[in-house]
Amino acid sequence: MNRKEKKATVGTFALASFLNDFGSDMIYPIWPLFVTTILNANMTVLGFIDGLGDAVVSISQAASGYAADRTGKRKAFVWTGYLFGSLSRIGYAFSAIWEHLIPFRILDRAGKMRGAPRDAIIADLSVDENRGRNFGFLRAMDNLGAVCGIVTCLLFLSFFGLANYRSLFLVAAIPSLIGGSLILLLVKERKTSENKLYKGISLKNLNRDFKILLLLSAFFSLGSFSYSFLLIYAGSLGVQSAFLPVLYLIFTAVASIFSLPFGKLSDKIGRKSVLLLSFALWGLTCLCFILFQYYWIAIISFVLYGLHKGALEPVQRAFVAELAPLEYRASSLGGFQMVVGLCALPSSLIAGLMWDQIGKLAPFYFSAALTLLSVILLLFIKKKEPR
Image (tube, rainbow, N blue to C red):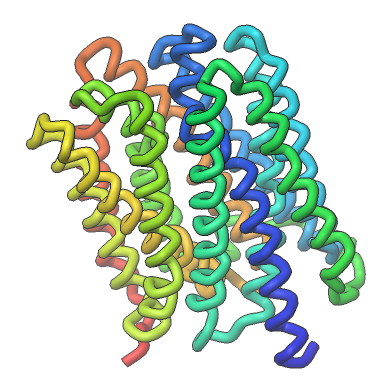
């Protein structure tokens, strides 16, 4: 595959990601209110549903990563994942009680099976000098799609109100279906033979730096609860319900703008340095909510949260892809996401229990402590950085 074809393939994946996030983020800004207000669930239930979704993400990515390396085929997992996301939103539209959300949440997050195979394709199409840029571009398009989805959500709410969520969910199913079709029709997969001897990856296949990155990311994920808690907390500070989607828009827009610059920066100064910066930004987000009990601090906190996500997600993926053994790249990416995602289930559940039983600040203290631990562990990674 020549350079032009590689660039076109990366562009197709980016466009599909844009469309998928356009659809998903039509509903994400109202998701916490939908679960807690329309379907009358408490914060523990919200944490359970969000955490369950993250755990399913981890399992689906690990399974798809293994299967992609085992069979030598990756594209099928990508377009199927987009189809799952589309079907789940149709299910949300017809949910009458919160229990109905569980199977559709599982289907929705199982659609993340696309992640590890897609990231492995992007990593294979890249070199060290542009890998951060490519992952940053992909994440920027993700977040740009999210911005468009949030704006669509706000326009919809201004005309029809939250009570008409069913129609919004049905509309949100369309972009992901189009994105999956683009992958199916336009991406040409490089033919590789099935590896019948492939038995899966184990810890002995991983180097020391990868193991440290895996451990610290697990600790960080255990304290990195769902964005739903940030929105509900902002509401408790006096932010009106109608303005909460705007806060989500601010966070997503900031992440969209800075994902590509952070990816490029990591190509120049190293993944480790930008990852440290991302942890620091999340720590500042927690401190803002802990130290300042004013509604206007929510805006600053969501800007910091957007910067954190813009730095974390593309750089973390590029870092994992580089530390992973080449022949186990999809499996390593999937296994990494599995560990991180499995820690996300207790993360949101613990945050919900702490919120209900101790107080709304407790999850932020817990997360700040685990973030500090992750920073300390990151200092032990010895991978050579660019000059």
